[in-house]
Amino acid sequence: MYWQKKLETMDAEELRALQLKQLNLSIARAKNAPFYRSRGLREVKSLEELQEIPFTTKQDLRDGFPYGFLAVGLNEVVRLHSSSGTTGNPTVVFHTATDIDQWANLVARCMYMTGVRPGDVFQNTMGYGLFTGGLGFHYGAEKLGVLTIPIGPGNSKRQIWFMQKFGTTVVHILPSYAMHLYSIVEELGIDPKADLKLRIAFIGSEPHSDEMRRQIERLWGVKAYNSYGLSEVCGPGVAFECPEQNGMHIWEDSFIVEIVDPATGRVLPDGEEGELVLTTLQREAMPLLRYRTGDLTRILPGRCPCGRTHRRIERIKGRTDDMLIVNGVNIFPIQIERTIMRVPGVGKNYLIEIHEERHMDRLHVKVEVDREVFHGTLAELTGLKERLTEELKTELTVTPVVSICEPGSLPVSEGKAKRVVDLRTKNK
Image 1 (spheres, rainbow, N blue to C red):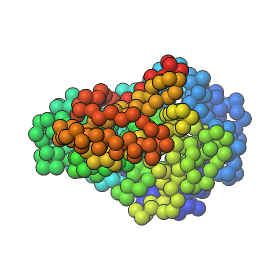
Image 2: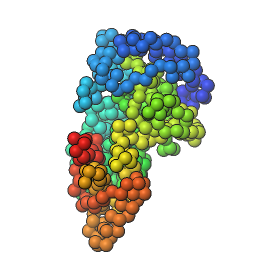
Image 3: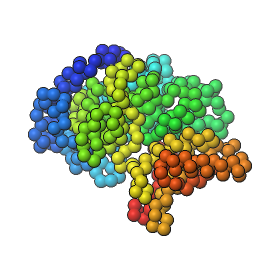
Image 4: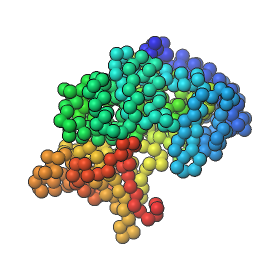
């Protein structure tokens, strides 16, 4: 059921025709929501006319709190998810029973694509509740017929116990937590490759570099797949890597994808980097038209060797609001991660701090190193520090202050990792 060959390998012309049909259904649904009712939406004759519809933003969702985007009656709604709302009103997302089923189908499609089958044991270490990541994968795995362990985050030794006792083969995990959990495995004297049955890891929910993904694969002996989703348009299942691990297929029977210039809103051609904009095609309770995700990526040109024709987006570089400006230089945290993870001897955790020194910005990068490296000679540690400083300077065009740290000395979160601390007075 989840290898939907006709849908997943549909040629471009057929796919565009399907999108146009679904787009007009989505527009018709959206007109029932107070926010879109005021925009004078009309049926479109071509996909190109979508560009005439104004963008929808996260601030629009906050301003429309709580029911401004609801396109059906409350008697048809069966689920609500929400952001934390730490900066004003939270964003709330509503689902009908059909929305939940469609979402589960998308996640099941993603998991099947990577090789998950009935008979696998799936351990879900992500948070449940208002966060969409945990429940999205849970429903997808059960839809696929996979034994599912809804363990949630934290309690690392218990996580490992379940992996051992129930032969977990597939795990859904934050990349930073995968690195932390490996340090616990080491302490317990467990060899994941010999003593566990893990073969697939789904990683996401926080920005991470391909270098970190490869390190997770090497340490755990798994294939680690990058996933993308956001609660505003459903949650996980929007885009996913296939076994080629070269970009994430975005399911174009459920979403129209655009890449726009973040400053001007101009639609960019395939291959150019910009902000990801999504239009939902299947949602009933809360359709969104041209939603600005704030995520930076590009559409990869060319067809994927796996045979699926849905276009691929590159891994997310960061968010438009994640960018750091250090003495006028634009820096994304993922650039720092990518650079340090390429250096042998670097450990599993790091921290970025920005200080204000003599009225100038100063970038500090604290890097844990492997235990044997930390206990090496002073000359070796000095050499490693100099190499990290030089490689970061080359990548960033800013000279950082690099500190070599003992393994386990930097703070660890069992939720999303907090990698950046801005200590400048102007940002307090």
